[in-house]
Length: 109
Length: 115
Image (cartoon, rainbow over all chains, first blue to last red; front, side, top):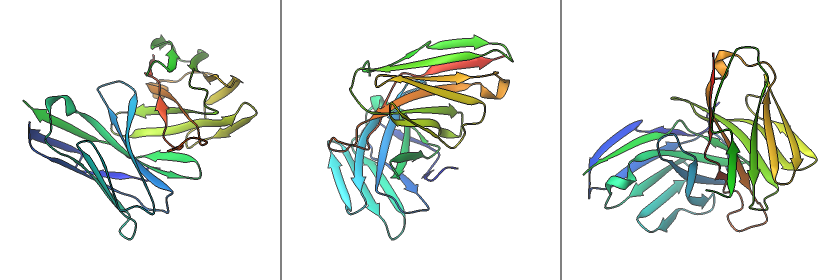
């Protein structure tokens, strides 16, 4: 069963706008990760935030984690057409990852 | 990521056939994983291995078996393929000894169609 559940399922924005994606989960975690998948290809790790961290940045990415609400958000600033992809949150516990169903992001040029 | 390779990349087979999907890695990681991806369902864990002598069932292991031939190789077998095993299969690796050790590195995937 899926641990993480992303919201929205699909997001369409204009190039240059910010994209915000949310993830909720149910049980205790060691860390939460976000991955990106271009159509039909392997997943690529974007960013990891540990359970004792609240916010993390990496380039145009900003991830937050609220363990009291069991939720995380991924913000992509100044989006580009090349950011078009599916994004997955994954919760880490017991040395395994459990993935959500993913969010499809479309960035219009 | 060329460090994790999967063969074949595409495979069409018939119901009842036994097939093997192979995964090789040059990252030197001890941990390897097999997932399947179905449209709208995300990735689900089939089997995982934390070292050559360790094999564990994941969420959806029924109908599958694995073999960890070496640190670098982890194979997934479908003993008797059925149409609902049609999916995109991914291999992944990780190394808990490194910083951000729970990050996983994925192969390019094998697209399997069972007729």
